[in-house]
Image 1 (cartoon, rainbow, N blue to C red):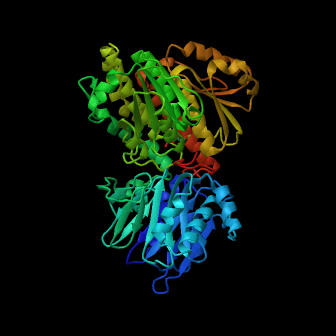
Image 2: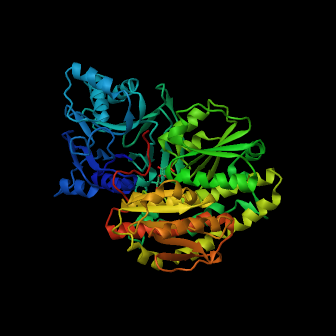
Length: 610
Ligand code: F6R
């Protein structure tokens, strides 16, 4: 989703703003822009283009513009097409420049009001509404800070802004409500960005703004005000992320690197959390033991890949802990009536911890009678972590590829830890010990699975000119099939659907012919025989079968039936092991099709709008 970077420094800031944008590219965007205040004249310059940061750099040639104060932006279109005019920064009256993340929900009414007052809009965006309103107050005599504070009172929605004024050439005013924003502290220079990764080359010291905060930044000064306009102090934290944490290393794509990081990421997620066959309650934070003791059932809420992790956890919760569990996508959860039985723990899963639907669901849930909220999240400083009662952090490190890979397998690891801790409380200590033993085997099993890559890369060639694909699984491997289909569709743009294999004959079988590749997840479990019968239904209709099966399943390839052997692993961790080959398949198909693997069209990494 959109990215903001801003800087106030002695030196020219354009190169570091461009580098910041480059580091935010992973969030997904379709246009980019920059505004700077020229030293001496105080004039505002602005350049913006539909396209990539590289296109912006080309538009800025032969030399990057000078200026020690500037803001820059990558836009992911929500209101208006991804074209030059809708790109940020928006400049009003050659005086005020603004970049914006998020959505101003009441922009129609404000647009009408501003138009009646004589303002002529040049874009279709809600962001220009904000720029125009701030400039109106500024032109009427208010300084930039008060103009922003006053304008904020009119906005409904979720947003983060950074604003410049040619009349106050030394400062940036920025604010956040609903969209993340951090302040970076350098020596004699200050920065602002929507994500720490943008600023890692220039600082490791950060202030994470709270909801409603407004900050006025100058080279030597930072003043923060809360939502009521009172001056406040916020703690300075040191990021432990290395500046190269977001580099690709020797890999061609971030997604490829992140697939390979999974054994280490899972090992990190387990580190220090299990001792002597038990999960340490303290891994979930202070007071975890008491809240887990009270848990009689789980409700899980998440989106996309994180939702698939939740679906796997439902099977685990009921099978291993004997605890009832329901799972729902966050965007639906918000808009229906709920019956929350006593003793229900809400478990919220999000890689970024900034997904608007997830945060809104959590806030909604606060009114509904859940006794506590447990977050599984990959970003320690995120809004989700701040708002939950308990947190279990996945330690996957920054995930840059838009398609989630290591976030998913570390979420599954964290969820299995939670289920193991709950199993003990349900009188199943033996079960807990078995789950812990299985958990510790994941990193090595994932390493073995990655060794399948050459075989899967060859298989990808058979998918490259297909329009559609079906993915099948049963039981706990049905969500794995869903995740495989999601990966394929989002990065290769091949239409892929996943079904519980038993559903095939209730409709989707009509799609099966010689042109339809059907991918099946077939581990050796209680449902294998059932699954094999379903696969026969496909074979009888000429479908091309690609079956991912562990050795114990003892499947043999023949004719249009290709078997890809997956390493054997304990049943509890089989969903993780069977996910990796599907990630690799999607990756290689996308590479062969020449898509933008790390930044697939129309998608954003962190979905901070509803
Ligand atoms: C798919 C993908 C998305 C995210 C979803 C939720 O590869 O990455 O489906 O899983 O947008 O994001 P988080 O987990 O950050 O809440």
